[in-house]
Image (cartoon, rainbow, N blue to C red; front, top):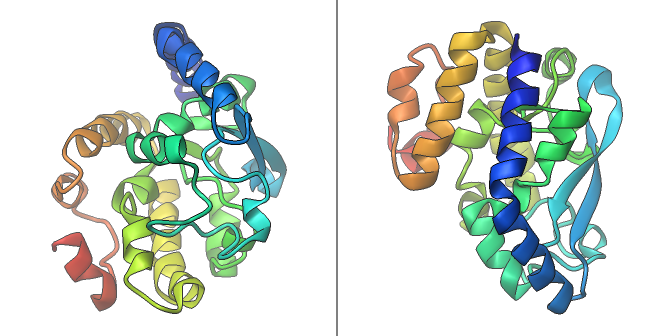
Length: 223
């Protein structure tokens, strides 16, 4: 049933959003490096890699510059138009094509680069690859302000590996254990909610069984 909803919702979304996507594609072609799409290999279902689609927001060689696949607040690799696209999450819209192709679901663990996937404990990795990765999900909602979290620390990659990745992995493991249509639709609604109200902590009230965050993150989450 979830796959059926994925196909219907993603097809409708592409149809309805095409008047927005076309002008954005033209804008990207005329600015920055002239690139429209950015394709990056991510870890998907059964651990197989797939090409994740995004609107181009960073320099083409960004994975080999600075913090690599970890993006931080004020990252100099982000193009001017890209800042707006990333803030509004519009750069993620091409992943609706990934959903139609069957690479992804609307809801699921956020697909990681191999470097970030390897930062998860092995037991978590084994659970995450059991389901299709998602355009949004519990990890995406809780860590929607990840770039700002990283910005506050000097050793950003180490902070990601030691603090963020273990808890993000625990959240994605929770999703695999609690997946179902109720969770699916609840997370779709919560995604829209936090886009409109980014400071909201409602996710902790909707899902009372979420794993508790470490002390380093609890204050940042406002809980």
